[in-house]
Amino acid sequence: MYLCLSVWIRKHCQCIVPLLNSKSNHIRFRRARIVWLPVMLPLLAASQALASTVATPTFSPAAGTYTSAQTVTISDTTSGATIYYTTNGSTPTTSSTKYTSPITVSASETVKAIGTKSGYTESAVGSAAYTINLTAATPTFSPAAGTYTSAQTVTISDTTSGATIYYTTNGSTPTTSSTKYTTAISVSTTETVKAIATATGYTESSVGSASYTINLTAATPTFSPTAGTYTSSQSVTISDTTSGATIYYTTNGTTPSTSSSVYSTPIAVSTSETLKAIATASGYAQSAVGSAAYTINLTTATPSFSPSAGTYTSSQAVTISDST
Image (tube, rainbow, N blue to C red; front, side, top):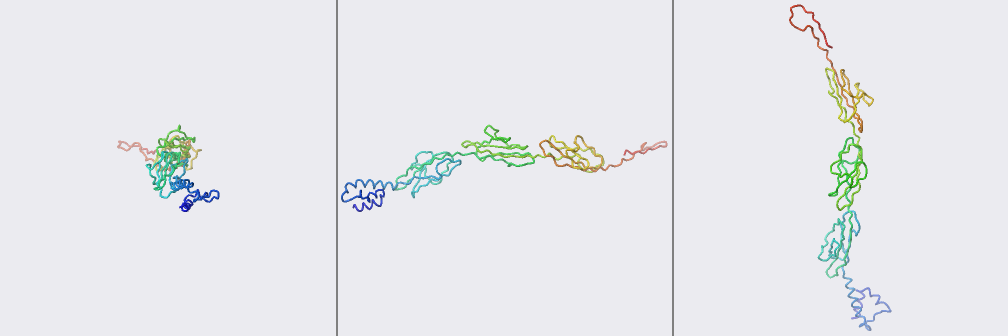
């Protein structure tokens, strides 16, 4: 019996094997069996209990502070163990939620878990505290920053649900005291638009920025009447849709410049000629050249007679004249 006990101890209770091998503490079962049995049996029972406890569950990713929601996996090294967990910091029991798939942790919370298995003692409680500091997405702009030749209608958007956007158009850093974005912004001059987003449960976003270079070009001047062939002199008006534009023109077909004649009143075109014009305005690039070619085919006036045709009772001295 004692030989069997010694073998069992050596196999299942490694923590006391040194005692069995020590010269000073060598156990002689035949001489001291009554003294050692009460000591050995509790040790054997304790060893058996330790060997049958489910491993403490572990968490991945580990507890910590994150700036985005985390997908948390709970695992246990005890084969076949069943895991139960809580997400409110309370101690889990076998009545708690059973773990079957990864947990989404989108707010700061403490996840706790236990492992159980038939024939094993329930594990210690595993715990992982997650601090989730979500940050609102950085606002984006449409159209994108760039150089344009006309005014742009800029839309600011944010992918964070329920976010409120604040913006500036003078290049300064926006705050929650800046203008609140509600509708698209008209950008008609060169400027930098900056924006931030805020939302409940989120920290303020990074600053989004878009620089717009607006190279507005004055509209091309137009002519009335339009270019064409006429049988009489024409009074030509030149106009431009750019507010406040100054028009410069030539009548000999040369390209006008800001040194050319300034248009102020209609131009009398009595012979065939080509009018050309440009427009300039503050904050605008010079317009393209507008051109209108006029062909004037004047017709000699029909002669007239005096006295006019008629019946007379005496000879008439008839005068023929022409207004041309």
